[in-house]
Length: 73
Image 1 (cartoon, one colour):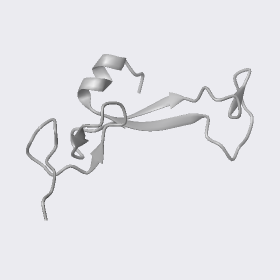
Image 2 (cartoon, rainbow, N blue to C red):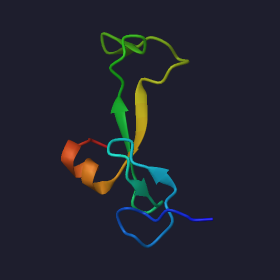
Image 3 (spheres, rainbow, N blue to C red):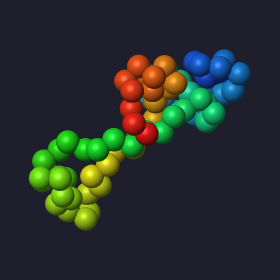
Image 4 (cartoon, helix red, strand yellow):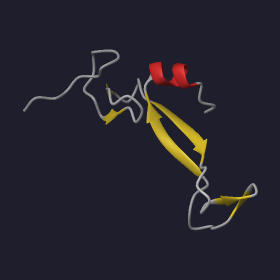
């Protein structure tokens, strides 16, 4: 059984993939970012329209994408 190694540090086994570029990441190299949803079904005029749907989205990205995209997390 072959485990993929982290694409950033190359030291630990990968647990997740970056949702922007697809590189394998370990638990120490992953950054979790919360971004506001732009879908009309979740927000209307700045207010949350449904308590069942989150108005924020959590994505997991690598350090490179975090710096490149300038997420406010």
